[in-house]
Amino acid sequence: ELLTAAQTRWPTAAVTSESLRRGRDILTTRCATCHRAPAPSLHTDDEWAYYLHEMSPRALLTQTQTDELRQFLLSARTP
Image 1 (tube, rainbow, N blue to C red):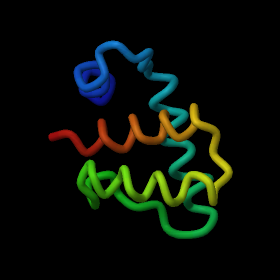
Image 2: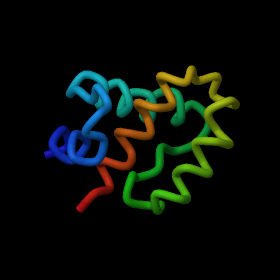
Image 3: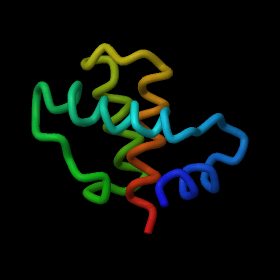
């Protein structure tokens, strides 16, 4: 389950089903405004870190939105 993967990965963060949903929504709405939303499994953790660093300012994401998107992407790609 996605929530379990996220809570295992970030045990001290306040990861909830709602925050993961918001991360997914950012991917499918904000990211998809300019390009097709990539599958979370398409990139490694390091690649996602790079893309989030590059693209979050372009998408005018807040730090909270970037964190929620990161948590969704990395949790969704966890086997």
